[in-house]
Length: 489
Ligand code: URQ
Ligand code: ZN
Ligand code: ZN
Image (cartoon, rainbow, N blue to C red):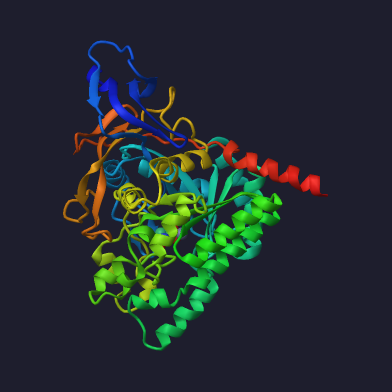
């Protein structure tokens, strides 16, 4: 890398971390933050970026993407190159994707497959969660190997997608127990898959085959019940639990309730993630008269038919009743969505969001006055770094941290559109949304990948980032939980 790229001084910005906003400068060399402060002494030839009037924030971490994901007879159209390039365009400098095996398939095999797919293509750093879709002694052993030798500290389970990814309560119990033994974090997709399957059959039999059937087969209590059940099962084995993609008010309430019980009784910690889609769109879109428009909004759990859910969820994020925003970017083309033309259960589930997640949270959270910029940094970056144990390498602006930095212009605006986005998918669920707040510079491991608004992402520049077990942020709470329980007994 040439010197002007290698040495960068970001001057006169407002440097934001979760606990502070400080006026100052940031000096980067060799991909790492070397100095933070004022009147810094730096070598000649250093490139200067003027951040006057702008925020200097940690690069976004998207904890939930599905790039090149084979799902429901299709493969997502955003691959690891297009997906990470789009991520960078929006201010995200690390993603955590999912390697999900079929039932009976080796976890190690699917992990290796995803490493092969992603390494060499990713424009920014990435980590992996591994799915656990079945249970056996082999799975038990492979979970340990993944944690010990392959940089995995999180395993996703599914309470939905009956017959292909879903596990039952006794399997959940075993998987959560194993996560706890290994110092890993259990992730759960919380929806009652058995009831969904029954309702879908009823709707199809009644002649309801269009996209509206998806929402009708998944009423909000179906999500809320599963959130509560997952929290109870995890608590039985004292396992930290992270509930992915919380989409509705009742589910968010169930999560907030479980968190408050955990902190009052000394139970194991629970974390909740919602999606950019849930903050910037709603379930009315699934009733649109254009079939493709409706199908493009099909995601599970579904976008809430309650149009006030968006503002409710952003408030819960501001109040730390929810902790993170992911994208769940899982994009299918019009042709792929058409697999479910005659049967809504065959429409591949998933929406876009990896590019627009930061802008949507800024617009709905900060610009609307619901959260401050420190909380913005927490929910878009730092909390993910802490939970998945890559903090303070990622998720903060501090000496020694990776130089994953965004210079965020809070005044500039942009209008989201599929015509201008960088993703491979031809539809954007946020089409037409005007967003205040634009990433003017995005620095990925010390390289300027958005330069005064111009995208210069480099294929293969990103690396796999191992996520070590026993995140202090997560397991400190488990230890505290044990102490409180002992005190009580
Ligand atoms: O369930 C998920 O997270 C995947 C398979 C993406 N699709 C979705 O509808 N959420
Ligand atoms: Zn899911
Ligand atoms: Zn997902």
